[in-house]
Length: 262
Image 1 (cartoon, rainbow, N blue to C red):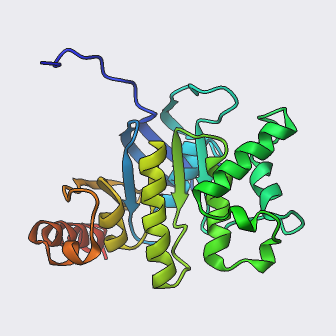
Image 2 (cartoon, rainbow, N blue to C red; image 1 turned 120 degrees about the vertical axis):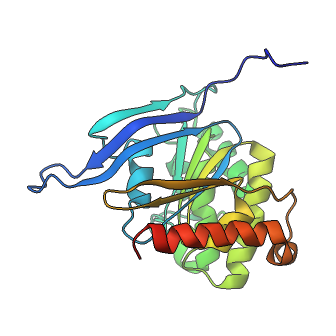
Image 3 (tube, one colour; image 1 turned 45 degrees about the horizontal axis):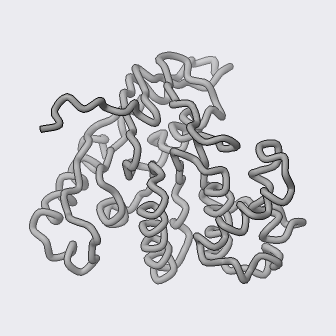
């Protein structure tokens, strides 16, 4: 029996987190009383209405904006020349004057001194997302899905323990979105990287994640956390017909639309 085995620290822990925009005369608090732990290998989907603070929460976790109350604990990096957190945005935000490989290398500048090592890691990240043959392309020669995959490769190149993804597939057509969802799951299983994935799509959340968190209210708080018990690998058609998955989606829709005051 392994009941006394040590528990590894979380990749990130939020305690009593609150955020408000500095300089706002109304002192409006956007996020309040948020407590959350993300452990190694977690895949968490974060859902909520537009304006609920989902993207803001990712920015606070990433350290792009400071919390006004509470604490954000981030486990120190375990690997040399790595960053603990990587981020993928709603749009790929590629630099148009850099080719694909140079865009992926950009995230390593200031982190990895050796130019040869930066190139090696960038090529390895492009291989993970299936774009090695596009290394010399310009961003404007890529499709929307390909640009998002380059953005994902750039985030993976820094070897993050936690990947923050802000509605990365929301603007894509259904076929491309489904393909990227499956590719993301393969990458997640291969790397063991923890993921917080923001989406408006309940079906996407329950297909990808092990845990779904509903954010809502004013100020926003965690309304509900639900585990997705469907075994992996998952099949979309099976989830559509599975009574447990259907009940889970119903609970999420109820929280999403009614407890949030909609």
